[in-house]
Image (cartoon, rainbow, N blue to C red):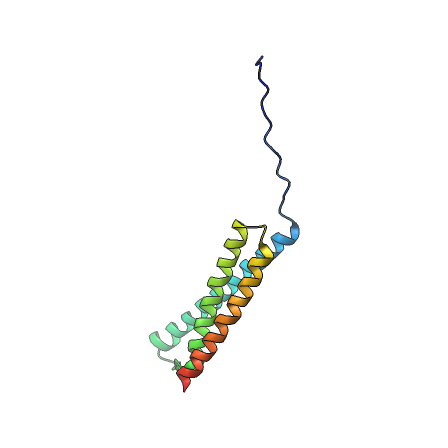
Length: 118
């Protein structure tokens, strides 16, 4: 027998609540939704406009805004999930910062598309 007692590892007090798991999954699902929607649109554009030349899709300001919004929303959603997983203590602060950032970016895109149309 050993003379020394092994020290027990401290137990973690914090656990992931069911609410946090649902929150992270919903954000990740929304990111996948944006990414799949963008992929389907690009696939339809490539198939019908470029390859088959059945439908002529005009790349105007609305299409441009749609592509930018879907791509950046997917990236922001995945980025939010990864930053929340790294720092679970500040989940609400990170989420509110993300909401403000998403709002400001969407306003910037709307004004940029309005200028592009003009």
